Image 1 (cartoon, rainbow, N blue to C red):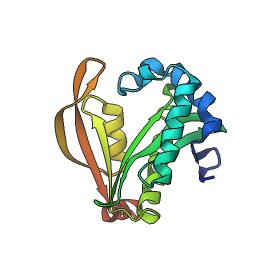
Image 2 (cartoon, one colour):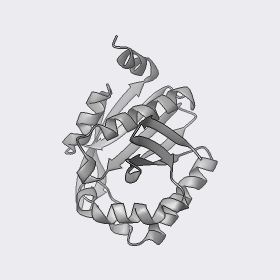
Image 3 (cartoon, one colour):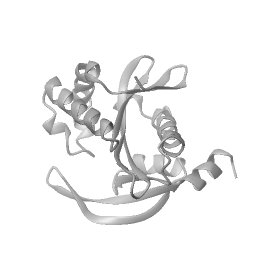
Image 4 (cartoon, one colour):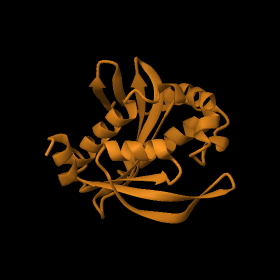
Length: 185
């Protein structure tokens, strides 16, 4: 199984069916927070729904078009980080993430994103990582900025978020930019 140790207390693990119950509990505990920025929480009503999500992700992984990892901190599942899309034709991935409200502000997402970005460039051999963020989601935009992403544009009326139409900021990071950021150039 794919496991990536980032620090002593922080690692990424490939989501499997063994995570379904804990993932559902984590979603349920953070439902009101997640619904601010995500479409899917109201559709996640049981651990059966998280099993189906994981099943779909594993099928997507087997087809080399997506990848979903759990973020574990001190051996507890605290969030999820994904390549929502692995586009081999355009040589890019679209990165997505969320973390439990109580674990925010500890650098966990930034470190997890850096790990996935390294994996994308080194193992998947892509040339670009993209993140799409609701234009009102300031904390997630700050993550993109800390990671050295460039704001490439705004897509207006991009998503219907529980009856509210939101726009998305599109952030991009090329392999060269990432290498410069990592080496302090």
